Length: 324
Image (tube, rainbow, N blue to C red; front, top):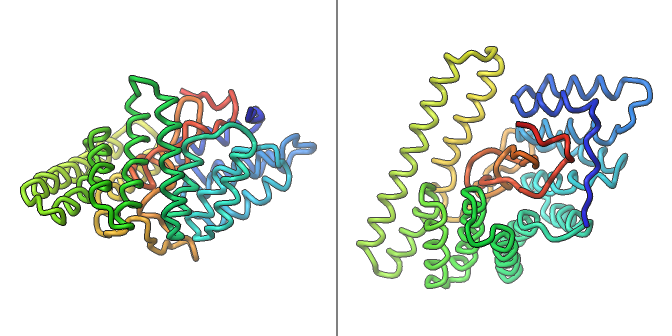
């Protein structure tokens, strides 16, 4: 059984700063912890530094600190999980696969980490391996969610089905791609990307009316996301938080909403990459793994479906991360 060491109490303030979007201050707090005489968990401090860069999608910097964290505390297994997604975004696919496999080797299978392996395989055009991984992620997530999945669990499953649809699109199996995408939009009807793909599949299958309806749903969902982004920006611009906190939260919310509403639909191959400003970093227009922060798990990215989508209900940092 995977057991994650509890995050050192001395690093909780830095962790809270990351949650608040105050990344530079989080790094200052982690550096101060490291500078103190006899810091008991330098590897965890390096993990916090890595996580702050990962959250900003500065993947080259994140990679350096994840490597250092694992050198210092190889038993801090959560670092393998996030390192895997950092490496995936850097385009270092073999290294990403090894990181996910290292994480999974430390304990029971976790759907999101298996999903990460599927993303690597899909990016490497290993369709059979990708299909196997996505089906396994679906099975694990369904078993964990039970007969009445929460909204978060449904959205996780929707992501997995959408990527399974990508596999079947790539292999030319339109019938199975249609079934996958229909299941995805059933589970998460408010996300535009699978609707957009479904419209393309239906058009290729000769169902013009169905394609038009799916495209209309895609446009509606995208417009809704943009309205949410604008609303969030307006609220935060006039909110009670300190300006730097409002700016960080608004920037993340708007960026994530805009990504949700733009990047994946513009490309017929959502797992193909777009270069990022972080040197060699690659921004997946598909996934990175999930919802940002949960009650007892730290998530690798914010609220957009594909990179997106949700974060792992798996990568627990320890009991002290159960922050409200």
